[in-house]
Length: 136
Image 1 (spheres, rainbow, N blue to C red):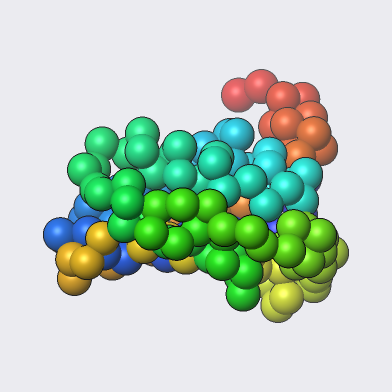
Image 2: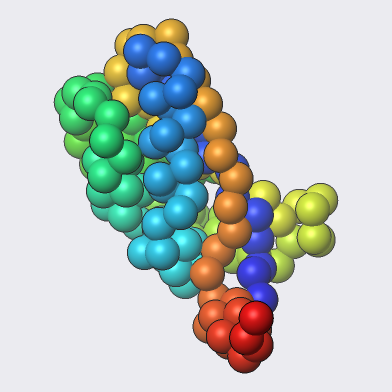
């Protein structure tokens, strides 16, 4: 039911554990996962999930990339090519499983030396149906 793999790289925290916590929170966000499935380059869902991670960071230091597309710098959204960023997501969503289906998110939240990664997948209606149709 998932159409793509997501890798979130977070950098700039004080510790690696803090970066991993932010990355895992983003990957676990249902709103973020559905935006990815909807091919919506929604920077707000990524940053909102980062803010819920329980790790302090400077919002004015945030920089964000979706694949090659920079969406934010110095805590501010940029005027980016939304159709091109959406096409990036579409291409990854139709890519070959575990070869060309990885969506890359890169989030910088400060100037610390901490970094961490987390992986997840998008959240489709098919994913929900498959996982709701059985009981344990």
